[in-house]
Amino acid sequence: MIKIYNTMTRKKEELKPINQNKIKLFVCGPTVYDESHIGHARTYISFDLITRYLKNQGFSVFYLQNITDIDDKIIKRASELGVEPIELARKYEREYLDDMRVLGVENVNYYARATEHLPEIINQIERLMANDFAYETETGIYFDESSFPEFGKLSRRNLEDLNIHRISPDDTKRNPGDFALWKKRDDEPFWDSPWGKGRPGWHIEDTAITEEYFGPQYDIHGGGLDLIFPHHEAEIAQMESISGEKPMVRYWMHTGFLNVKGEKMSKSLGNFLTIRDLLQEYDPEVFRFFVLSTHYRSPIDFSQSALEQSKNSLDRIYKFMENIDELIESDLYENNDYDDKLIRKLLFTRSNFLKAMDNDFNTPEALSIIFNSIKDFNREINEKNVSKSILKRVKLFLLEWGEIFGFKLHSINDADDRTKELIDILIDIRGKLRDKKDWELSDFIRSKLNDLNIILEDK
RNA sequence: GCCAAGGUAGCUUAGAGGCGAAGCGGUGGACUGCAGAUCCAUUACACGUGAGUUCAAAUCUCACCCUUGGCUCCA
Image (cartoon, rainbow, N blue to C red; front, side, top):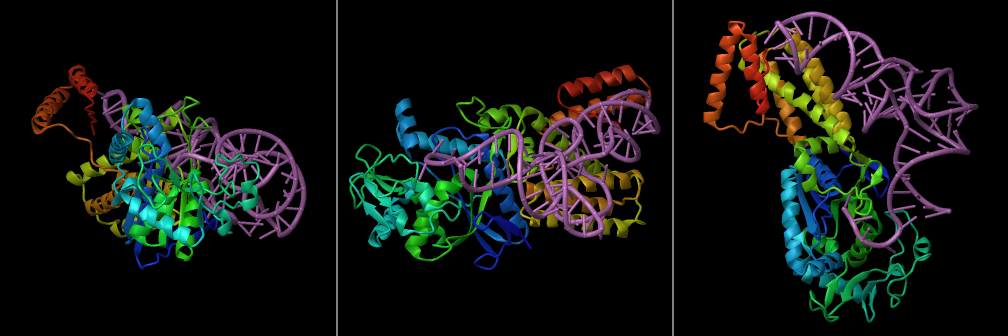
């Protein structure tokens, strides 16, 4: 039984999809006006893991993500750079998708661009207008907050608080909290609408897209913590007003922030790090491990030393994997006396692992169970209690872990065959030298290979 | 001001009434020609402070101290 922490109720709830084992998942994608940063990476790695686990547990997941490719920030940036907004958007969208692929985020079924859903957006606004949930002024179409008394139910705010102490940027609005569905603009880029030329507001694209692919109600909506207010509130107000069906979403999931040295990452503080910067220095899997070593809802603090720790921790798992691979290949011993006991041990470990994951995707606890198991099996291996068939089962379990967590778990061996043969010759020569106890020359070979990142470890 | 999250060994993170956690790092030992990996031991008074509830509190209650974040740009 999978339990998910639902931001709406602030409780962990049992996951029960609307339609049997089919899950409709929507996660807010980026506004593509600049390079993606490591905070984006945190969020999308988290939802990638969540999707992988749900699939592992037999759910069929349709993972939909929007791409905000029309927005004031895009237009501003484009005009600064003297390029077309759509060009700029496409460029950063490509980079975003590249970044995600490198990070092993690969479970999104469909990326929906805002600009390719204008008819749906306009249609939603028309329906809001027709039922007096929205009104028109000289500057645009606005959602009438007062028509939706539940506004604020996700972020637990009330309308009075929201309308106090606020300088309204547009005084044609009835209430300060009313938000734009359509902005009347006749500068590029614009689209035609029943209300003249203009552009959609920020919140409406998501509900237009989710209604198009999922309908008015679906299972899980995710995003960063910073989107709860006002973005997700606005989505709820729009969709539930249009359809009259509640709730729009069964489970709201939000990822915690990624901070840098305890502070929020921001350009003005100068601690801003893009995914590309990161990947110049660190392996994507190391960052992935770093992200998954903290629970997805907790804040996570980025630092060089944290990444070093992650690297060493991940190495431990890889080395264990390599060790059992070698043992499976070898013909050292075959001992079946302990098989029953070890199979039980492994099953128990797996069941604990799944229990941790079931509990709102508790990856840190799941990892601690993996490490415990590695330690345990290392001990059994040292005592020569482990048969090959057990090792193969251990390997299968680790591979399953790798699939859920998104680690490839095969040795990074990018050498071509010819190089491998040459290395094998060197190893053979070194073996002969060692037989003759020529330590000086054999250490020399090992050290030189080490310089080329070829690690030789004697048994 | 309002609303959140949190303070757990040197560091990073879990846990959530009774069995003293996981990883990283440090030290000593076993094994190695050496190194590495692995194992064993150790680092260790672990739970912000003060009260209370309880047979039992890191975990529940209350108060207090401190940190961080959000409050219509935001993953």
